[in-house]
Image (cartoon, each protein chain N blue to C red):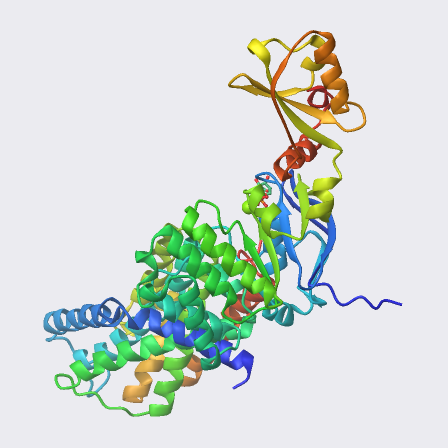
Length: 255
Length: 315
Ligand SMILES: Nc1ncnc2c1ncn2[C@@H]1O[C@H](COP(=O)(O)OP(=O)(O)O)[C@@H](O)[C@H]1O
Ligand SMILES: [Mg+2]
């Protein structure tokens, strides 16, 4: 390993250690919350018609909840780490170090993905005994997980850079991440929506993340998997460009 | 022609403004390899701003800085590897314990297990061994300060900058830090120190720059700085607490417990002339002592001048 690689690896390890030290908060709590959703909605909606033929409501719901939890945790990991070290001042240790924008970027994205993968795995392990879930398209599943989780980790980097108070971060989370993930078709198929909301959903990148992820399990989805992959990749590339530009120029980090 | 070795730090025309405040107003100087260099100046002089620019935490509006010949912007990776900076603020990452924090910091610089013995040695030298696995947030201010110092040194940088490392620390720790810095310097490290304790600078630094309002007022060896000011202080106790004659009154700098201190320009006020004035006024001398100016006096002299508006100069 050369010096730059070791720098990257160390930062990644630090980011993982950071959430690992408080697994109860960073992994267990979101898993429990999501499973409670599953329990409550599955009970309440148990009489509902199948969304896709042969797919019960509970089966339909589970992948969406997993993806929603992935999105929220990938975002939370990078955003809270960055905002925290910025506000505490300890970000100077990173800013003074010979770490480039690519190392900084990938370390935060990969750490967010690791946390998201843990959360997703834990949810599935707990839920699978109760909910029969096929895996029709494993490659699509993995691709959607990486692109969607990666996108939210990148959004977290941007939010962390832009926020100068914890309030800003909370606003980002409450007014952007949570609404977009709730309005993305986690709890329903967008085909059941009124026309306006149906159209609006197709402008929400989170909709494609959820729909594409669900395709990985059932091989069926509201829009084509290629459309979901294209939207999610496009979104990932666009916000990555923004985040990398911020890191390269030192936007809001190096005054 | 140019055979002098590369400067440890080369600061060229650096300017930085915060709105209307010109924090740095065109600074240029070199710090030589192996020097123990003092960067002095009153609060708000621009010391921390300069250090942040050297460290790459802040961008200069104009000018450039090179660390051992490596430009901190164009060749930032190499420049940063050569540099260790102890920030003025007591910043820390609350999630880690002391030794993990230090190992992580080393890793950022591409240093792995090979520096772990060095980390242990620093913990020992800085009296932190007992706190090795203590969480950063549980440490006292003085301990956090020591970890900050170790953190700046994990990658064994040839150039080290310490921004007021002894501010607000107790006497014992200050001694520990002095010994530590001396040792570092003796092993060949270039050390740049900012401090509020002028006796500390006088004691430790080979060369000193005094900056004020973002400009260098003076940069000289400590010895030359102490010698270049042709004045000294004369303390007198007069018999029966007599008053000084009017001609000497204007020389008084302080007066306490029946002793007056006069500031004498070597050329203008030879000591003999003071004695002559007292004798002709019929005043007896009970006790007398003289003192050469220390850095404190010179600092006041220089930054006093720096503050000089016409009214200021009259004082
Ligand atoms: N982030 C900032 N925003 C606005 N003004 C600043 C900032 N940082 C420093 N300054 C101003 O720049 C000047 C130099 O400050 P500083 O470098 O901290 O001085 P020193 O370290 O010598 O005490 C001061 O007038 C200070 O108020
Ligand atoms: Mg300062």
